[in-house]
Length: 387
Image (cartoon, rainbow, N blue to C red):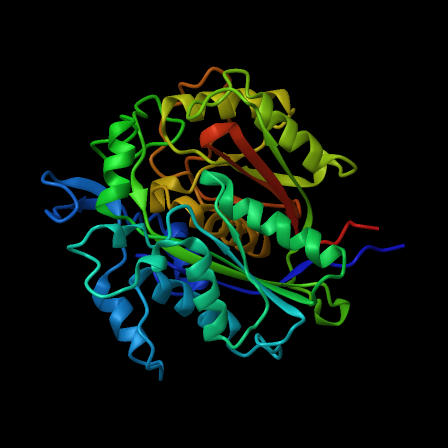
């Protein structure tokens, strides 16, 4: 018996590279990175490299919406992404059969700064509050789910949505991953000595840290077989694990990520996998661990690409943004190069593409790893192999 076909109805990405998935995919395919040097004294006294969305662009798009309520910058980006993803869809986002899932690590954390928060209530900092306001904007009265599980939040949100749709709890689920850069977040990553003073270079011999990025991405998922089209992307499987190694450092053996990949691929042929879109933060600990886990999984000969060189680390949005880009690569049968990579220096050699790569297989693995030893993997495909 065929399982419910959990598939993308539509998607959207909002980032410095554009406000549509097409703009973003075409930008990275052309080798364009959004990581540049910024000088923002309100964030920190010294210049830093990051990927930041232009406030003027956000405001211009927001003005096209007829809304009287007041929303934070974080909430506006999420709402705009969902609006863009839901255009021309014949579904009711306010329906009890539709659920909203918000993926974020810090949400409105910038509001704890009194120089930023001029008038919003203190409860606006809570993630559940933002999720509720976003769902209510679309008239949805279901209690939304908020997933904040460090850097695997986005992939975890997609896996959660797949499980709920498979069980028939809902007909459609809106997954939105969003985070913004703030003084608080810059200081936090800076205290861990995790930030690079130059544009990041995942898996490269010169990798020395990450850049922060901000953005939003939305995937609207369905279990309705009637809405499947020839261009549909299916979520076939997914798994979440924890290596229980350290509060911030990953397992040196890659055990947690290895287990997540192993569980995700169970029952599916490895030869159908075209590439691995890995986490690839450009920190030495992460990149080294991933090379070991991917090698242990028997996938090291596959192309392994990181999108962090284009966007930086977009935190709770990363897993959704990068899954959407991976899906588009499968649809277009063209994998963008891993920006910033030139020469490998990981314990296990990875097949990191230096140039855009033509694909022939129909599936890919998207992985993520985060603080606290959490790991996740999801299997995407242009063919529904769930029977």
